Length: 159
Image (cartoon, helix red, strand yellow):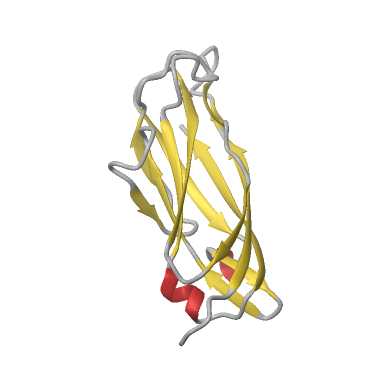
């Protein structure tokens, strides 16, 4: 009989913002992401773990597209959590709506464009409008020993 192992996964979220101006006197286009949370949770067993963080992705003006780039803290920007010499891969998905319907999987360092959804204020006073989804596969858990695994995913938004 296979015994369950105990894992503690810590994933900190970092945010980078970009602003762009279009000629003299033009209003600068800016983007902003708020309401991201760090993940810090114990986990026992081998089941796939899905973590969701509804957030606010703002663009001024409040229409058009914004671009998202995610980068992990693993070697070469890989999406991995580390403990000693062991690495536990995870997946990152983004959705331009709250919750998980319509998620798009991101590759580390690769920019993806999303349409702005439901923007009224820079802090999404009308409700959160995007979702960051982190997925750790149970099969990946089976390949590493129990322990505390940590890492950082950085999210960059630009107009």
